Amino acid sequence: MSVTDTMHPLRRHGVRAGLIASALLLAGAGVAFAKGFAWPDGDKVAALLKARLPKTEVSKVDCSRIGGLCEVVAGSNLFYVDSSARYLVIGRVYDMESRQDLTAARLLELNPAMLLGGAASSRSTDGEDLAAPAVASPAAAARGERMRARPDRILSLAGLPKSGAIVWGAASGPTVTVFSDFTCSYCRALSGVLAELNVRVVERPISILGSRALSELVYCAKDPARALRRAYAGDTLEPASCDTSGLDANERFATANGIAGTPVIVRSDGAMIEGFRPKETLAAWLKGAR
Image (cartoon, rainbow, N blue to C red; front, side, top):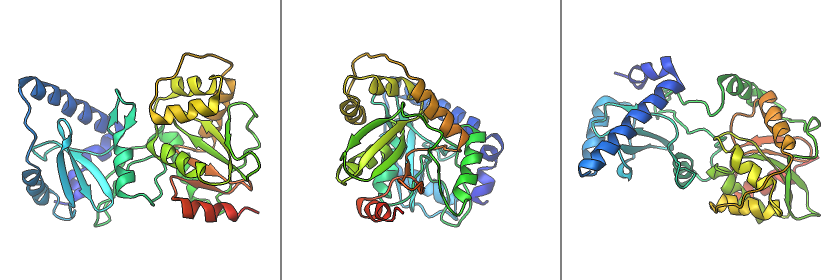
């Protein structure tokens, strides 16, 4: 049986099936904890996976990271199974208490230099697609695919108002615009890289992971740049309110231009790349502005 045969139900039902499977697994985990939970044996799960996914080379199985789920690393890819290796979940695991995208953080550990525009990679080592769920609406994701396919990769920012942006960094440096989500681990990592470069950052928050309320707290803060750093650090921000129509404009722009994941980085000449880049790569790309 091939990987695609195994994943046929997820292909048919898409994101909904993944979310339902995740909910059932996590609900089951709660019952297990109540009765005295014991971590599954990763070696046994790996053996079961080898039988069920013979074409997928599994690098590591870790059943101790997330209760009720075993994390499976296959090359540069990441997915989850239950302790019986019967149910396979492709998508994101989000810690609602710490407000962290655990899947994004783990993928960044595994692949610090790869392009990750907000979605978990889910392609098996034999090239068969494991049906990764979109991180935005299907329509936005489809527009995003068309945008990525364009050879010039130019994104005009002319339709955006001045409001809706948080400006930080070197005032005299070259300008780079970043569409970000404050709960996105890649955005947090990118923020650290940009802080080390001599650039003026125009950061435009968009809500990919349901973070609109946090975006408003940052944007409306007395010192938005400081609040931005605190948000990425996971600090609790003070209540604040203001005119957030600029954030609405960011959301409309993202939808209209097929931005279905974060971060998206736009150079001063309109050249655009999606996803995290290491410092050396990003510095060289920024120097190429016309």
